[in-house]
Image 1 (cartoon, one colour):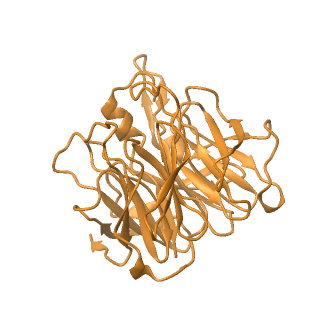
Image 2 (tube, rainbow, N blue to C red):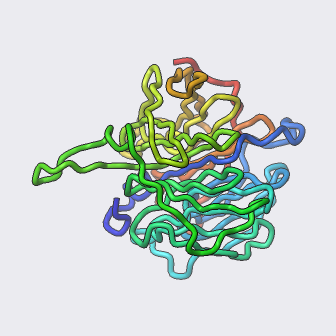
Length: 343
């Protein structure tokens, strides 16, 4: 997908991200003290979302800004300002994000820049900017393991591996490695171009890693399927979900052998609603059961990405049906993972 040539609706519908990387956060305090909705940065359409130290959360916008907010108090500040002269129709600067708790580094997918940023999660200082795939390829989401950060590519069948040294120390600028995906992810999406040649439409989006870092789970938004991926070889096997997933699958959160899959509404369908599809994985992670969905029509509006905190799922709202103005309000929603409506 070329972000330089699509219209506004496709921009927001296609780039809802997500995200998911480290294993779910431990319970850090009384859930009853936390509000159902927490304000995000006004006028900054959000995509990426993550939770760092304590109750500190971060929302990132396609305009390049990153907002730091306390989930308990609702107080926030701009950690990284928006890019100057941002043009919604032709530009996109930041998508998925995650914090490595060892270093307190905030890793951010760089969208059409084909790059990845690393910021100090306290000060907002930009520490590194890695070229992963070159300008024009959409780096979408990421997962952090003990020894690497893995990024998905929305425009090509690749993952991008950024190795980490002991305790999460950053690598040199030239150490990023592309990993070609093979197996089911590559084979499931073959189509034909105008001349009848095979061509894929690989919308790599949400990604999570198992606690031991030996397995990645990657979503393909083009066909609403998820895949188990070997992080060393790139080989992929489709995870057969019964009944099948539906819609534009986005960010993914892994918590206690369950996948929480962000599924924003279709902006072209006024009757469609946001939902988080919940999949219980079997032991081999090659099959799973769609046990139901979490919905909240009053507080979900274009769910883009999420993270676990205090036994609850927090998601941000990109509001894809609302044209972003300087006074457009955005927010983060807290959801109970126990309120799953069965399929």
